[in-house]
Length: 62
Image 1: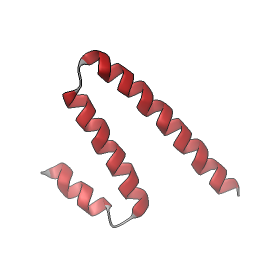
Image 2: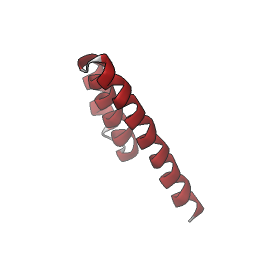
Image 3: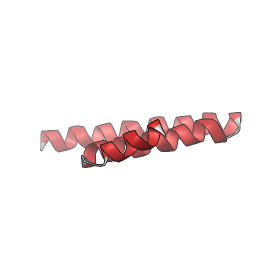
């Protein structure tokens, strides 16, 4: 319930929308994946976050 409220509130701002959406995906994986899959998913999420940060930094420079 709380997660849903936060998700709906964050949709007012598109940047928050992307952040909260990715957070909800990570939360779902944390609860529903087996431990080995969690580790693989965690690594994938870290790589995705790093690439997003790099893209944002490039946009700021331009």
